[in-house]
Image (tube, rainbow, N blue to C red):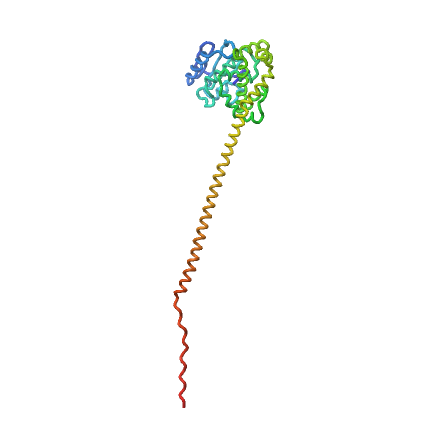
Length: 324
């Protein structure tokens, strides 16, 4: 992460100061172990691809908390940054041991920021933002940047942006910045691959001499800047475009599955309830029918078993009257 211009970085006591070679590391006691590791790593790997060995002194400040990190970084630092390089002050501000898991490997982050300072020492303000960030990613060995491109919705919807438009993407939020970092990394690594033996070394010399990116690319690699950009964009789409489409289709299908499966389960349960209700209704109807049939049978049986009533007898006739 690169920040241009001044930034307030007043470090309070009782901070601990460690010095070795051209590096000074300042940290609070809770981060002393990290500070020693940072100093050892900085001095052990103090060369950068294509550049002469840096000579300027560098201050590395390890912030004890997020508030101090924001204060020391300055207003231009994004909220999600893990470390900041301030070339005008030859200073790096890093998050300390309380940094979240998203802060990444602190040694790789340190290498990234040191590459910014080394590039600025040799070329000043010549590199545009995309090259500055891409070079720092290449120098730090951030090969996992490619993974962002395999799932980039931007590649699917809009294709590969121009190199000039990449600079604005770094200010567009974390997700857009991640894609810009990945594209910048690919651009610089592809540029270096054009000369298998010297990489970026000759290109940097021409750039410093002529102060022109286009002329430096022409002299070092035999391409115009526009031709290189067209080649880079074609390679990105050929290498990652299909993967991005596939990854996003998989994502869409996964999201559809997440939405559809609960609906299917709900409908299945509703159908099961309806079937159970119908089964219970059928059973009740069958019981009712059986009860009615039994009642009819009982009534018929009672009728057959009831005895017949004898015929009614008429009263006997009155005896005839005596005859006179």
